[in-house]
Length: 585
Image (tube, rainbow, N blue to C red; front, top):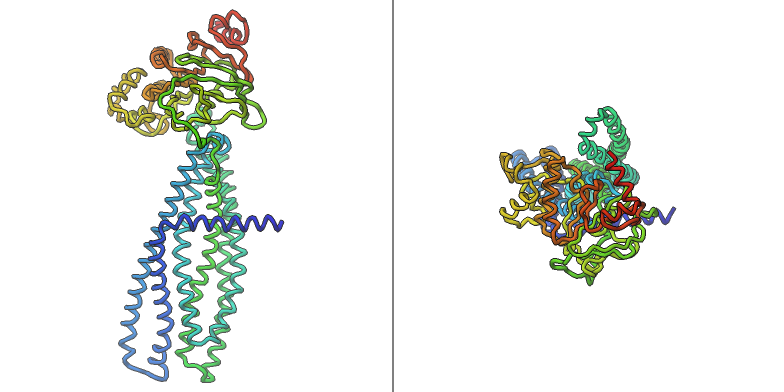
């Protein structure tokens, strides 16, 4: 138990150190803010210190009439100085906080998209969105508030403490008895808030996941009429989030009353002792007023500092979730001696390849060759491992056994960027970005000319419907291309692959979303595209791969049969069974 507590403490300290290092590039702004905070503290100390001469000069033993004219002027000058210092401090520290948060968000996003597909198989899109938006949002609020508060209030506390002790150290010492007593509850409450804040952010991640799935699958929800079920699901997750936030609010609200009670006890003691000393002639009313002013002004930053501890703990809870992602190591990385391929030949070879997501094997002892320019079709029942096999070619994952070679070189010895440049993918999910048609076609080659983009669209038989759109190639297609039909989206994806012009082509159910007319056109386009390219085709419709150079029949992660269409039909194996099922009518 003690070891776990120590590890937790070290983890917390690590979070603060890491946040501090992230803030170092903006130390100039922070330094200016610190200097301005000293100015704010100096004006607070000056106000407390000037109470003595003003009180003694106006109503005390001295009674100097000049103070009647001097006091209003001094009040205005001090207020102007304090306002100027406070503006400089808040502007520079808040902009520094925003820059730190901006840096964290950029680092988090950049690192997230560099992680391998294995990470995304364990983490939902909603959870990642929550970390980048919600958790960093908590940091954004907390960092600015904390940096401003700590600098301003700590400097004011030090200045006012100095004035109180300088004026009457005995009276000030009595007031400070309360401070250690108030720190204990603040730390205990802050620890509670950190725990509930972390769990609340986890609940927010789940809630964001529900939202992401809802809006992505709104068509299915509408089609099945399950709005009420989804509404109930969201309400349950939202209530779970509230349960944690309510506890955070409870402990946050508890701190102020506790500090108020402790502060009132301290002030009552100081007032009683001070009045008795004034009555005994040991100090003037001005001395007492100056000390009381300093103590009253001092309790305000003290309460804010103890309150800031809660904010710091919330930030620590959010930061821990952010750093969890930043500390996640990518499974797929370049080896130190990895090679760069220019434009490869496209020869592929699988040597005794096995793969498993966990303990359950997905691929077992796959050995296969695809010569340059050869079309290899992968067929088999759902769950046979076809998509996983082509995913290994993209290095979404690495084999758990065996190796995959491109042009005789192990994929793990090829730089990832270089490998990607030699592979074009048309996935069964026709994913498009919320951008223009031109930008989507040129996604793999953003430097492509307008002529090249239009030629790719023509080869994919997409130019006809593009020309009918009001803005042509500059038409914005909406989120996931929802303004287009399924066939149109798929043809744009094929145009994107054509423009990529890579020696290895992967077609994962590339024609699955097309109607009969569109499929005929696209099959003609794909025939041109596959010429002189090594092509791996995943297809359930056997009519689309009858002319493949090699058909690989897979089942339960293993290769069951390999051959051409006519050969496999004659053998009467699994391929014949699949063929008869599709063409029985």
